[in-house]
Amino acid sequence: MKLSRKEILNIQLQGQSFETMLHFEINEIPEYMGIRAISDVKCDGKLAYDPYSKHLLVDVHLSGELTLSCSISFKDVIVPFESEGHLVYGFDDVVLLIEGDELNLKPDFLDLIWLEIPSQVISDDVKELPHGQHWEVVSEADYQAREKEPDERLAKLKQFKFEDE
Image 1: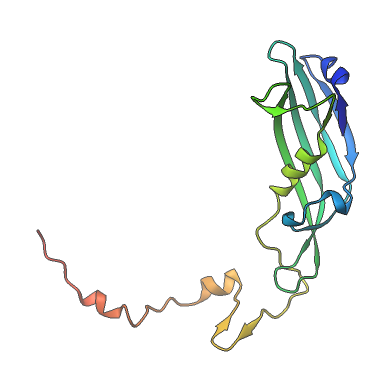
Image 2 (image 1 turned 90 degrees about the vertical axis):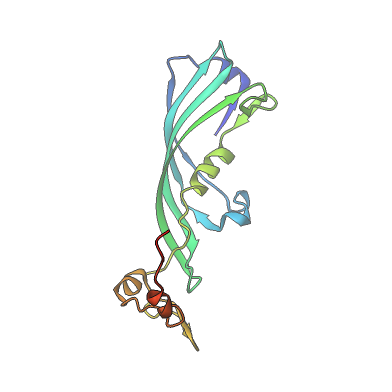
């Protein structure tokens, strides 16, 4: 979604609603984001330009589906997302800078999507968690259900008596 300087200057302070679909090519997504693909993103919101401060205010709601890598099997997992953002752009360097005669909102919208990525994703296909000699991966529910046995190395600390000062 791109806006020219002329379009920005013509936006009223009361705001202008917008609704569009954004399509992200795989080469537009940096590798560090860990996103394998993004479905078409529904993008709606409101633009308002304040002529006194010379700032463009963008309130946006994004929704769609991400294809991420399973943390265990590395298979593709489709994860729905919704994100909201409030961005402020300006022609000076105090806020997000509008460089040149055109503002491309797509990279900033991609950053908002990136913030919604969970730290780990596990596919529903994973039935058995990995394990090895002296280690295993356990689910959160299994971990909570285990009885917490005190470490035998720390058991003698319970016998320690503090003296009142």
